[in-house]
Image: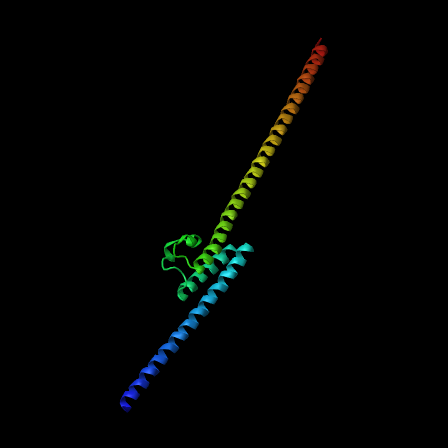
Length: 171
């Protein structure tokens, strides 16, 4: 009877240890999950502030935290983060991650569009400057040609006058 009680006590202690370990693991998982939530919130703020590179790093870190906390869909790695909402088994964490990742994705697309527009404006400005310079050079060339032509006419008249003077002098 004493041996059975001792054996029962050992089983109860082992069960207690197992439950304590599960409780500690659950607390750690919740802590990691909260860290992921915090990272995702920071990422959202960074996207709003235009800090897209930092936001992407925070989103990736949040995803890793969520994976470690085991709160994402099992096949979340098979899809781009901004498409996780499409998963039939999407968890609330998949949806949150997907929402912030999609906002980042849209911000990146907008940034690329702005950069292209800025490049186009810059190129158009350079083209206009080149055209204005070419026009100015053409105007200067025409002006020089007119001056040279006028100078040539003046010299031709002077030469003609000088020849006439010379002819009169000879006569």
